[in-house]
Length: 224
Image (cartoon, rainbow, N blue to C red; front, top):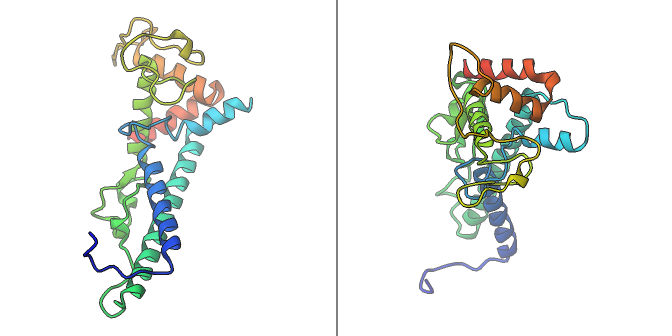
């Protein structure tokens, strides 16, 4: 590594600062999904829990979704600006103005960006693996809800509440997991503990009973 020809720069601190910011933004994006070991809570649930804590719970999923879209868009813009700034710095350091362009294509920015439908995806994002739609986010929300129904997640603790080992009832105050660990799925009749009934209960707890119809409509519309 010592033999690699590196030009020292007086912008080292600035470069390190931008780089660390890029890493932090990317980690925040990754940790927003269940696939991350450091996943805490679903981003469309987080604002509702904050509302509950302020004793003014009456939340629309649509509002939480829009806040999440804005957060992702802001993160995307920040990462793109950072990457282009780093490119400009290194192009200047190495005198590559006639060889390289500082611009980074939108599809090469590696944090998620959300569009309402596939038809709304910008041409500049075509080919990106980080494009998501409203449907993707609602499916993700339902996955988290089912996790709460089975006790994997809890509205009272961050991250995994249960992934094997000893069961701790004290972690589940706001919403109780299914008692027999069996959730029926049927399209013929509604049962007291089937997945639709459990989902409605969960939605009422998280977003309030007064918004249940609007929130079910939002979910149904997103799923098509």
